[in-house]
Length: 433
Image (cartoon, rainbow, N blue to C red; front, side, top):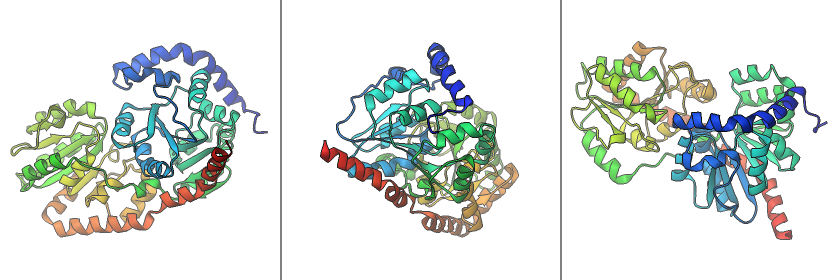
């Protein structure tokens, strides 16, 4: 029966009911000290809304962080065009900053409440969503179980379960099956994800495709782009995007070797977590390179070797400046970062071997010679050097990548078609009321 919870979930609910409210203040203070919470919006983590609920049917989307939000912004735009009110929740300050920049008018952002029944109940009491769309894989048990108890339809969109997550969930097969059974639909982003969801017990699975393949090119501030383009016009430029600890050392070492043949080379490093910018700058200075930090208002003027783009929401600017982009999280064992936005802006992509978060996308790109896999710093340096001296080869890689993602696209339209019956039901209920 749907209302019979496995022991693991019953224990989780009891423990979170008793422990989370007691531990929450300490936990959030710990995160505040590390810059992982917004002090002005801390109440949202307790389920206390900071904005009023908009009138009419409300569609709630939840995703963990920046990547999930970027994937569903086009979907949110389509929903707003259909005059549905939209609430987007996430759990990171970076995603909140992105929401402020990129969410369409009329869409509301809130931090997701901590997963305690009290906080979740308070959140749902205020927002009263008519449809819940969970993005990718951020599945909080109390959030899901309470929605089910309140008979809120739930759909998993752009569903993803990596091999690592799949193996972890296999240790609690009844718990994950009970959670997935409460979803009306599971719209997987690949055939592999669909198969894994099926083995975990999800009903009504469809392989829709990856919404991230339909994400448009990120914007850039026109005056800033014009100014920076003029500054770097005569220089060779490479970028390392969404980098993680250790990868900056690799790209700095590559720059040191490459500048022997390319003395005017500019390397732009955009760390995944911008607060790491000053530390990266110190590492580059320690390697004898001249450095500028975007967060301090600096520009990549002549004589600057490494430009640290330690700000939020400016990857569109970086990708327009750099025709060669190393995608971070792939030499460090973090599962890789999304290459689609860089490809849409004409960049040739190089990546490391650890790309399980986007395994099928990178497999398609590599097979079509639309990206280059490198195993280590030496291979990275050789690839960057080859593309710097051979722009024709670099352009061929970029064009192959563009053609590949165009073939793989269409998930946005298929997702909208799958959820259309639910949207129709909301329209009918609104007319009746």
